[in-house]
Structure formats: structure tokens, C-alpha cells
Image (cartoon, rainbow, N blue to C red; front, side):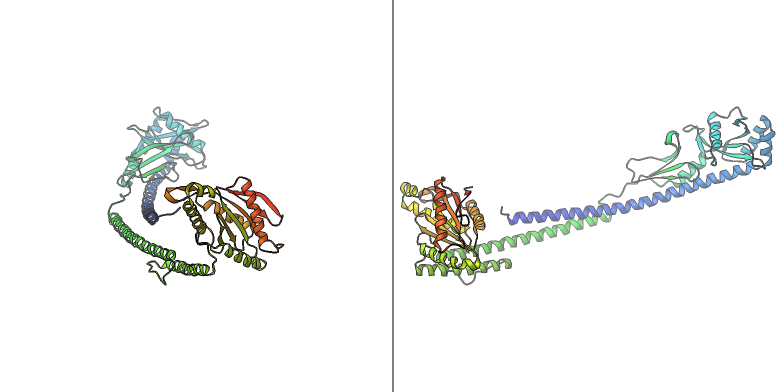
Length: 506
């Protein structure tokens, strides 16, 4: 299927557009990834700074509680003090810890820590018992979450000089210092959330600062070392718009460059079309000259790529003109069809027969046009002559230049496929069937449905004269006519009989 230059250039423009879009998209992804890395770096710094400050606060509180736990008065009251003494000592310790909202001293018994205060809530007592069951140091735990009394507990063990357990110092700390750290660390348009472990491997939000957003560009979770708490950070700052700042300049620069490229392509397209039309006109002039029997020395051409082709066609045209003149002079041309005649056929068949031993065998196809007599009878001899000329022209377009195409007489034509053995000649005949027209216009608007019958054979080493291959091709032609016409039979010289395969009309 032939393609137009316009379609080709449209495909080139489409490819260019796709390339520009791809480059723009990749550039956008690269910029976005760089921004993403920048946001991730900021998120990492914020999370690390916040986590370290909370961890430092917890460390200071643990050290403070550890110092109280080593006081002899605390050890004595846990071992021998009454409930009132335990309460007084707890109140004394609370007065020395500014962030404390509650302090409890829990003596140790064989069944574990016991509360000396009637007001100690079960959650706090359960927290101490869980810490007792664990071999690790006590971790902070938020209680009364979501209420105005929300706080977190921190417990340290109290041991005697022999490291025997005597009880626990349990302190409830206000959430205010931790919340203040979150607020100080929070960048603009960001969100911080402090989480602590809950049941079944889940987490629970205990403190939040800022507003969470589903469109956050970066989110990160980091662990606050030794506390069991997790810090969730979300950077809600949206990436800059595609056409903002310098991107606007880059975008319009790319549009201008693309428009210039399109203009250059359009100009190139116009020049190419003009050049091709010019060279086609030169080709048409050359064929007109060839029909008139004269070919010029040179033809003007605009495209350098066509020069070699035009020179080849011009040389072949000049050679054909000379050959036609020679054939006319020698009486080897059929004047009606402008093909070689029987005399020319016999001369070339003899030459190819003699060259078969050195260059390989040639094959012969004899062709009869079906119902040619009916054309003469129904439409007159002018229509018959027009059919001869039209069929000869159609054959000339399909047959290779190296082959010999002749009119033997009447409606009988012949093709010698030079140096083509039988299998190759079979393929050439199949191509002939496909490419010949199905109808040929005759005189007075009459259209003739083209049908033809053929017989094919090839030369063989046992042949003693050129007519042997012609006889076999003629036998194949007779069988093709007997089998209903409009097909081609093949005679195999090796077996000495026609083959079953036939080439049918497409």
C-alpha cells in the first residue's frame, strides 16, 4: 500500500510531539523526585530532632526518679512505713518534681506491688504489674487519654543494698512538656502525632499537633528510643505547581522551540513535495520520449537520491529504443503487439538452450487467451487488436527484463524465463497470475474479462534440441485447455509427464 509524504510527515510530527511529551514528563518526574527527596530530608530531620528531644526529656525524668529511689528515706518508708507515712513521703517527692501530677509509693509483697493509696486507679496498678513481669526497664505509658487529666506514668523500682525488691516509685507526669516539644518542632502545614502501643500489635494516638492531610507529600514514622512510643510525621506542604516560578519560563521556551521545529518541518515538507513532483514530471517526460522512440541525454532532477534511479531508467530506455530499432530492422518484432515475434523467439530459445549447460536451464510458458475468437466475432477485429495490444502491455509490466516475451501469432504468447529452473519458474507464473489485470478495456467502451490458459515446462539435460522444451510446454497447454481453461499446467521434464499441481486463476 502506497503512503503519501503528507502521512509520513504527520507521523514524524506525531513522534516529535510524543518525544516532547516524554521529555517533559521525565523532567517533571525528576523535579518532583528532587522535591520529594527534599521533603523526605526535612521529615527525617524533624522526626529525628523531635524524637531525640522527647527521649532526652524521658531520660531526665528517669534519672530524677532513680535519684529519689536511692534515698534512704524512700527505702525505709517502703519497708516499714504506714499508709499515712507512705502518703506523706509521696507528697514530699511530688513537691520536688514540677511536672508531676501524681506520685505513689507501692510496697512490694510476695504477691507483687500493692497500692497504699485508695485513690490509685486500676490502670496504673496494672501498668506497674506489667512492668514487674517484664525484664526490661519500665516504659512510659499514657493514661486517661482524651481527657483533661491525660498524663503518662513512669515507674522505677526501689531496691535495698542487697538489690532485693522493696517497692516501686510511680509518678504521673503532665503531658504539657511533651506537647510543647511537638509544637516547637512542628513546621508550617505539617502534622505530628505521638503514638503508643495498644493491644494486638496496634498503636494508639495520644498526642497530636497540627492537622492531618490525605494529600501530604511525605509521611514518616520513627521510634523514640527506649520509650516504646512512635512518632508519626506528615509534611502536608503540596509540591509547587507545574507552571510556577522558573517552570513557567521553561514551559514557554519549550513551546517556542517546538513551534520553530514544526515550522521547519512544514517548510521541509513543502520543499520535498515540490522536488518529488518535479522529478515525477521528469520521469513522465522520459516515458513519453520512450514511447515516441527517442530518449534525451539528461533530464533535470531536484532530488539527488533519485539521480541514480533516473540514470538507470534513462540508460535502459535508450537501450530498449535501440533494441526495438534493431528488431524492426531484423524483422524480429511483431508490429501489432510491439513484442518479439516467432523468429525472435526461436533465436533466443536456441541461445538459451546452448547456454543451459553452463548457466542453468531456462523455462518456457506458452499462453493462449481464452475466447479470443468470440471477441473478434462479437466486437470486430479492432476490438481483437485492442485486446492483443492491451494484453501485451500488461505482460510487459509484469515480466522481468531478463526474460524473453514474444507473440507467437494470433492469441498465442510465450515467455522464456531465462536461467530459471522449473520450481523458480512456477513461482514466477504464480506471480503472473496475481498481477495481471482481471479485465482489459477494448474499443467503444467494451470491457473484456481477461482469461488465459498456460503450459509450463523447463529445459533438461537429456534434451537434444530447443524444440523439446517447447513440445512439453505445448502438451501442458493442451491439458490445461482440456481441464477447463483459465489455469496453468506444468510438465516435469524429469518424470516425463505433467505434474498434478496446477496454477489456478486467483
